[in-house]
Length: 577
Image (cartoon, rainbow, N blue to C red; front, side, top):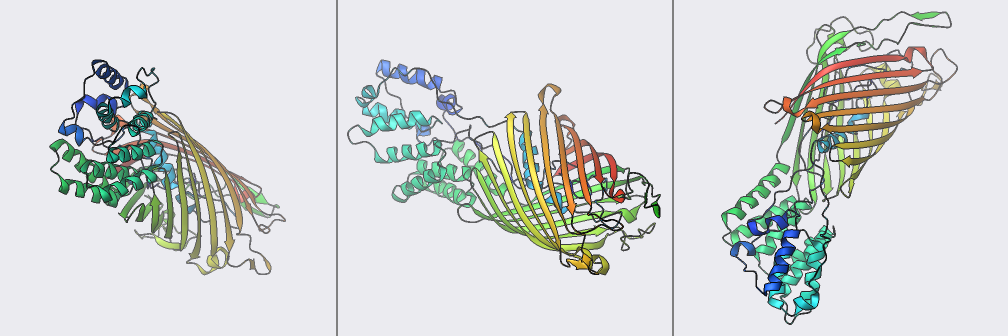
């Protein structure tokens, strides 16, 4: 996903999977808890044959049911950089000037989603639970004749992810004389949970704790709320459970793991990155010299420059009641060139707003402010050296982003974003032409083909509507519409010891309004980008992750001054803290 200059700014991640800590203390049921239920079935059949009874230890009674095969889709950890580094190919989409303004906001809309996919590609794929298909030699009638044994089996089944078994045992137990109402209510709630009706399961367990001050039920409720990303509610239930009963050390340890994970969701998250860059066309020179009607000829040649790309990202989530939260995110990225400081650039965006999320969905409403900076206050002529360390304000604006993410099972995910923002330029002449509104929508679908391979595709539409539709009696030709498609492949090569690769291709068509300068037709650009990146887990050192990145950009246009072709090779080094 490229900016208008072909340079993907640093990506910020808002959500990513976090392994859910398993809360178990009885080793006898650990195999069943981990999904190998054949051992548990053999055990049950042997018990029935011997007409024995399963003794329930105190540890069994406070056993916390939390399935390991259901991993929550989104967990808030900050800023894994999907494309790492700041590519500085400076490809311009010219209109009237050879070097048109950079638009890093084009890729900022996609940052959270793309980083989320990149991080998930480095993690084991979630495994869907599967019921044991071995023949059942025990009938409901046999179990109903032994209600005490049936109750114990149901109690044991509640500690497993076997939804069908829980439902079958609960239906049989319901037919016995004087069944335990609390046990049945818990079983019904677990069945709802196994059917992915997590909100209904939580509501059922909330009704139980209102009438029964049962520690085991309260712990199960807290685990469900954690899975459903109700951070504050889950933490309150864990605290209540610890106060109601003296829990074994093993359970207290696992409860602490949950509470630490909840605290992490609301802690400040930071990430910084730095990349040495070699830019082959820092001045946005045309692909080759050109002449217009034999009158005006350009002989500008590309300037090569070496510099440092940098980024700094932060995020904070404050959980409210239920699935609601307040979020704050920020990103700063830029490039500093050693001998060509006049071409320095930087971009800032800060978002703050409301977010709703559960196990499979995330909805966000995020107002934001953004600013764009340049290495020189004379933005067009670019003097040799401006002599200033901090960049000059080029433009700023504010807007609103709406986003929605959805998980479908364990393999498919989608992301949708809509945003609009108003831009104000510092220069009077540029402001008259390019002040205005930008509206953009982005849609993406991802498929995790295997535990080591993820594919995704995306479509982005954006339009710019200048404040002044007409200038000097003519249509303002700064207005444009842009359609872009992309295809990405993320791969983890286990045979190579943890090598991670990313390949992203994108194509866009930009159509300007009005008649281009020295022409009788509107400008049309065709923009292509290919990004390649490699990193290796074994090369990490104290949290520092190096990566090798290559990007190729090209613009074909019916206007010769807009033709661009460039490539950039750079090393990235990222650190989370």
